[in-house]
Length: 179
Ligand SMILES: CC(C)(COP(=O)(O)OP(=O)(O)OC[C@H]1O[C@@H](n2cnc3c(N)ncnc32)[C@H](O)[C@@H]1OP(=O)(O)O)[C@@H](O)C(=O)NCCC(=O)NCCS
View 1: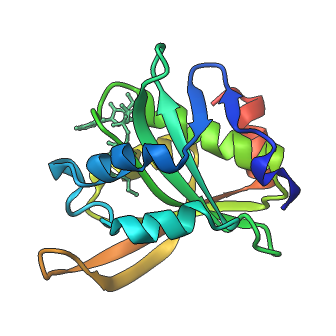
View 2: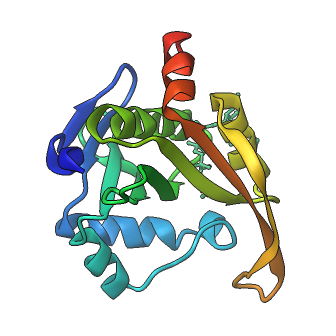
């Protein structure tokens, strides 16, 4: 997709974003390994992050505070998908519950639909991740279904994943109604 490097920085109504670079991986990895993430997202080795950061199919984003310091990160995947499916591979906020994640998520979807040919912006979420699931529903994402007991998590237990998405016309309608 042509827009993948078009917007290295993005200003939205309420949040400031920047594309992550190799020097940001310490923050990404440290955030990913915070205790509140342990059973909610995957923890990748540095080498996998380095490979994905250099892969045109991926986009690493940081959400920043007023001084430009990172508050959280997200990974998008599927920028080269010819069917226009872009996945939110991961999102994590270092200090949750301050309104950052919601604004970041909206800004990421805005970017995908504005700067790429994305048709479907999607992700999966563990069904027991009540905070994230409630947030996604509140923003307007549609639950497509559940992959039952499809993942063995770090604690050895099986967990189910809910698939969620928004399609381009749905997102445009949501944003026109001012999410
Ligand atoms: C999910 C996550 C990205 C959301 O980011 P955040 O900055 O915490 O979210 P916000 O502060 O914008 O809050 C979003 C909503 O969740 C609610 N919320 C946040 N933390 C909460 C908590 N601990 N308990 C209940 N509700 C909570 C907020 O009240 C808010 O609802 P509102 O918009 O109706 O007020 C973040 O919590 C996180 O990093 N979680 C760990 C990793 C994870 O679960 N990633 C998603 C995997 S799919």
